[in-house]
Image 1 (cartoon, rainbow, N blue to C red):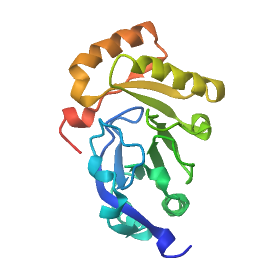
Image 2: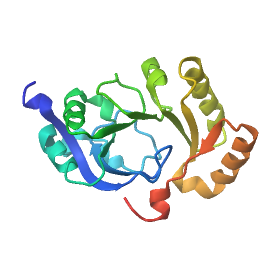
Image 3: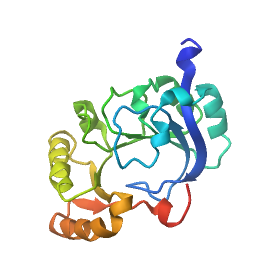
Image 4: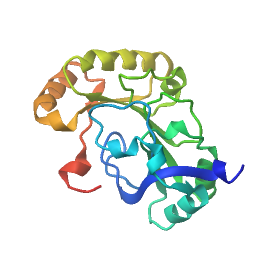
Length: 206
């Protein structure tokens, strides 16, 4: 690979706990890449959308920093990580015994080797079929009552090809007080789902 292919537009790197979904509470090194073509209005990291404002970072340097933390787990998030080829980064992480976790909307082709994939489909762009087959969890953000129907649409897609995928409903943060009771009641009637909360915001960590 050329030097340019070894670079990623990284917005930030930090060591924290996973706050959402199946792996809530697990310590991991987070790598947030810049660039997103989905543009959800509720996104809480809109500063990640424009890749051009984030410094190109060498994947070898990223791996060296990831190696310094006690947890041997890395979470790739964004932005949208699948806008970039993650094969090299994942190969280097794996060579150092580091597990790889991906958070994606599934709108760009899959690359990299992953121990866990959190698929979170969005309204603005369609999810590619390959992601339904490989997702460890489906995390649907509920912004309004109509999103339950959308969640069931994606759950049905998952059920056809990946019956072991975990299903989560997560309230959009700014509407959580209104939406959480609705999600609770919905899950009581549809127990294939579980609730996901943004616990990192409740305990005030990154």
